[in-house]
Length: 134
Image (cartoon, rainbow, N blue to C red; front, side, top):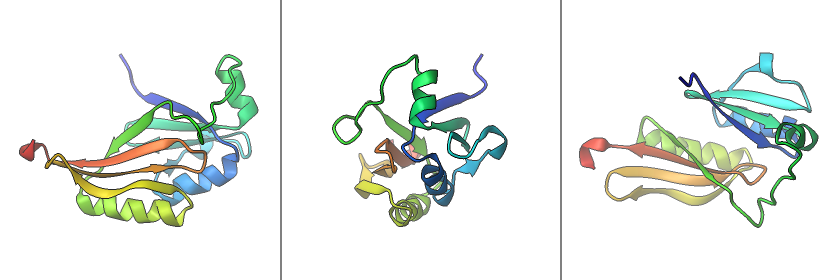
């Protein structure tokens, strides 16, 4: 049925957000990107599309963007291959200008993760999960 899941997100500055996601390790898909208008990345089995405000409003049926400094609509979670990868990613996020709002830590004895906001305030959660400890 589904081949890919696409996360379509608004970006205040598509080029700055493209640099952020490239720095933290998402794989750019330049063939689907257009400077200043949209940026595309492969993130595991999902695709992340960033749109400038005008383009996002168009593809989103005319709705305005929410104010991410006041509201959170979702937390986008992804898995990592190791605890070390989580620690490295948290440092990359900080250096790239993102805001880590939950430092890397053990969760429920079988997960290790952290959470951050990207340049536009979208919230992300990276997790390493050891299902043998679940």
